[in-house]
Image (cartoon, protein in one colour):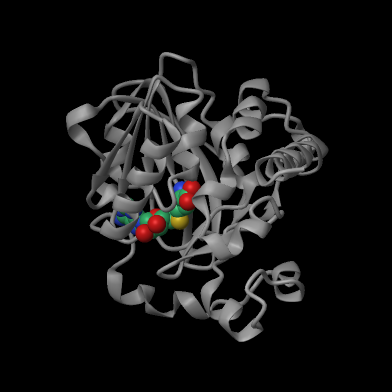
Length: 267
Ligand code: SAH
């Protein structure tokens, strides 16, 4: 088997065990997860771990989320093919690629310029043409292209940014991790029911890197994030070989506890 075939086989296994095995039944999301080559979005030295059931460090103390987390958040958005979706926290660009298989246009905002450049190159090289990228503070959204049928935030903030609620279309869904502590959040889905009315659902407990910005955490509090403890599994078989380096680099971004598994599908 060649390299591409090996990764295709691992991708297939990931969908079988991590997604179908956990009760994910959204066919469009499963198809997208079977299609997007996650190995292209992780650093070269971590490609062998691309389909492991864990987040992976992409550098700069940031992570590419666990595959299940990407699938779960994407399913929670309940996207239709004509939808316009906004992602806050582009990171590697992997989740944007998954979203681009399910929506008409993906707008993605990242506060670290390096990631915008790298993700843009990677997405263009792989042929994802319906993704627009912007270097900005995503807590303020992307007002010029609003309203959005779906908004997903891939970093955890202290509260729901008002700007993001305002940029939701009527009936639109915002999926965002929110918590008073930087280590633990509730994954919330906020649905716009009227001009000023929103319905909120708690989907489960999660752990994300901090959302930093005007309507997120201040940049200063962010400084300890690299020292957070690893999930047990990652500590046991960390992808970087050297455990100290792994401990410093790897960010938690997985499910701590969630109701999704027991309730079939969100919504
Ligand atoms: N979705 C990414 C994972 C993102 S990790 C992927 O598929 O790889 C969270 C990302 O959110 C980090 O890249 C971090 O820099 C970014 N981030 C944090 N606060 C932000 C903000 N206010 N605006 C935009 N991006 C932000």
